Length: 521
Image (cartoon, rainbow, N blue to C red; front, side):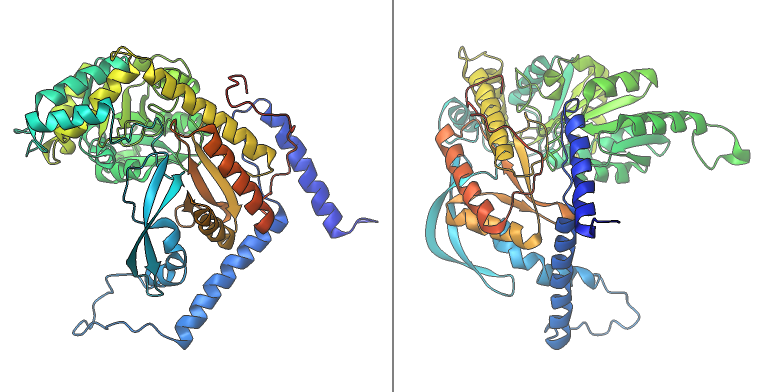
């Protein structure tokens, strides 16, 4: 190495990498800044020490659990590692992810004080305290207990009750459901839509209706668990492409068309019945969005179908809040199946599928979600309809547009300030989901608890929800947050970053003042 020692060589290579990434950042919408070698090494060592201490503790002080009797020859129902991981890893930060709220999940929320014990149990002590809410998916701030939406929901109870008492295919459909579906289709710019009572079930129970064992599914590696579960029920052949990697996706499309279905008699060629691409609009773990124009071009080129999950992007992206389709100004009819949920931006519950009338009519009659799951509760349907009317300006106000603009301003301002502080965050500048990387398990736990001491509630994410080298807290912004509240959070994060060393970013950012209301940030 000449006059250079090993540390100098490592730093030089890292600087070369960062300079390369900075050049790419000018043409790319999203930046994933890699940690340094030292950060990776220390994070791994810390994690392995934690696991080693757990094994040592289990060896010296075995868990006092009741052993099953008369089970000779039986395989254990539970694997041996899961209880161990829960006890020595998950339970150590259970207080960071499981807290009881006793208020609406607005810009602020109220926690009920609980004392956590070593055996993963807890007890309420009665005290309550208010926190700034950075953990709820209340993007547009419609999770309210007053105002036109709440009033509309209350009014519907007197007319329809709390529940229609059945599934959509029996006696569970009321006039509210039909009105919501019609209004939603108009809002999205498609022919028809169908709504369901649960967001997870919308994916899991609908996908098997139009996907079979003779179909090829091409899925982004970051797709939600509900989508993956739908694949399993359908028994389709599934191939995963790298996150937002269109070159990899095109390679899989070519291979699928060229080779067709495998294991055919006498090696005869048999094409796939359907090839379907599954992506999300806004990925809630990474804060990234799919490159929809490129996806539409590929699906048209290779005659594939496109399924777009807009659970997080509907309401949160686009000038009119119509999701990633609106964000890119694409034609909604170029997407074969539009899926979304009402649990985030709408402050309600349930999900929907929208698209061509022929498709929706078939789903309405044959999907498991229509046959077996309960219909959307009338007050929830009334909440959804009220939000749709506000977003479409049918209420005669500009409240919907104002909320969308405030969310955009909050998001860009907050993200730019975090970058100026030297913190590593993932995602595009317009994403209200902001993963803030801590890398170390111990730092993630400390950060969540330290924020709670400052009356700020945030959600922590670590393995197995993500790889342990990408441990993070996930900040979710809302149109209901004020600039003063955001500045308070930034001030606290700046202080904690010095306490535990969170300034991992090595990409220089100009420290020019960031204006909250500057739309050209």
